[in-house]
Length: 217
Length: 217
DNA sequence: TAGATTGTTAATCGATTAACAATC
DNA sequence: TAGATTGTTAATCGATTAACAATC
Image 1 (cartoon, rainbow over the protein chains, first blue to last red):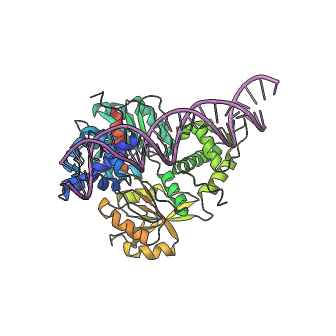
Image 2 (cartoon, helix red, strand yellow):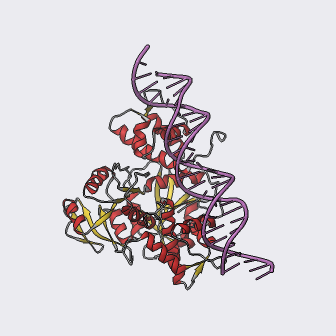
Image 3 (tube, rainbow over the protein chains, first blue to last red):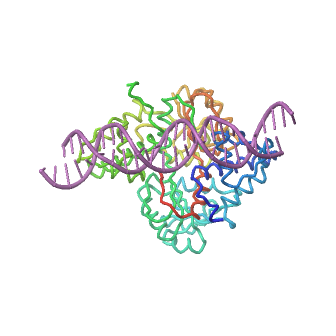
C-alpha cells in the first residue's frame, strides 16, 4: 500500500475531488456509466488527462463501455477520504468566516466544521451557523479534544501569520488559508492559500486580454 | 507596446498582484527598497522567479541595492490596472455573496463592486452591504449601463451554468466563479473558478500525507 | 467484425530553477 | 576593491497531451 502511494500531485487531487462531485450528480440523475471525454469537460482538460488521473486511483474502466460511476466514486473516496469523518476548525468568525460556515454546512459525509474560534470575546460561547464558537485561548486544547487536524483560516491579514503559528504549534496538519498573506512553515504542514483578491485582479487583467481559451478548476 | 505584450502567464499575474499588495504594506512601514529574495518569501518561490516576474513588467532593479518599492508598485499597477477603476458585478447575494461584498469593499483604487444581482425578488431594490441589488432581469441592461466587464459568480451550483451563459451573452469579459461547476465558453471570455470544496478536500487529503514542503500563492 | 474507448508510454509543452556575467 | 544583487540565458523539472496497442 505504501508502495502504491506514488505521491499523487496536487492538481490530480483537486481534479479527483471535482470528478467525484460531478459523478455523484450523474448518479443522482440515473446515469451509471461515464466516458473519460465526458469527465474531461468538468475540468476543461483532455480525456487523456482524466484517464491518467483515474489510473492513479487504480483504474477500473472498461474499453468502449467507459467507467462505472458508482465504482469510480467508491475508488476516489477510498483515496481522498479517511475512514472517519474529518473534523475541521474555522478560525475567524467575521463576514467571510460566517459565509464559509454556511457554505460548508449541509450534508457532507467526509468532513464537518465542528468548531469555530474568534478572538472577539463577544462571540465565544455563542452558536453561530449551528457551530459553537470558542475563544482563541481555547484553541490548542480544543484541537486535541476534537481531533481536528485541518483548519480554515479566515482572519484578517494582520493576524493571519500569528494565528497560523498557533495552529501549527497546536499540531494542525493542514490549513486552508483565505487571508491574503503567505504563511511560512518549515514543518510538514500543508498550506493552501486561496487568495481571492489576486484571483479577482487576475480576472480583471485578463478581461482586457480576451484572447485565449484556458483552463480552470 | 503591443509588441512588448509577450502575453504574461496567469501564474505571473497572480504573483504580481501578491507582490504589489505586500509592497504597499512595506511602503506604509517606511521601507523604500526591497530585494528579490525578500519578495520571494511572499509567494514561497525563489529569488530568480521574482526577478523573472519583474522582468516582465519592465525591470528597474539596481544591482546590490535591490528594487525601489514605489517604482515597482507603479510599474506593476501600470500593467495590472486600467486607466479607469473597473466596475465589477456580483451575481448571487446569498451567504457567500454577502461575505464577498464585505470582503471586497473598503478602499480599493483599481476596482469596485458597483452592483449586485439576485433572482430573489425580495432582494432587488434593497441596498445590501452598501451596494444596490438588482433583479436578474436587469442584468443585461445594467452591465452595459455601468460598463461592467468582470463579474463575480456566487450562485448555487445548479444555476451557475445558466447564469454564466447570460453573463457571456451580455458581453462580460471575465468571470470569477465560486460555484463548484465548470463553465464552458467557446468565446474569449476568461473564467477563473475558485473551487473552495476541492481546495478543502485537497487540504484534508494532504493533512494525512504531511510530508513535503510546498508552494502556495 | 468494425468502431470506440481504455491504459500506458513517449513526446511536448510550459514553468521553475540554476548559473553567471554585468553592475552597483 | 570585495561583496552582493540584478538581468537573462540555459538546464531542469513536472505536468499535459499525443499516440497507439489492447480490449470490449
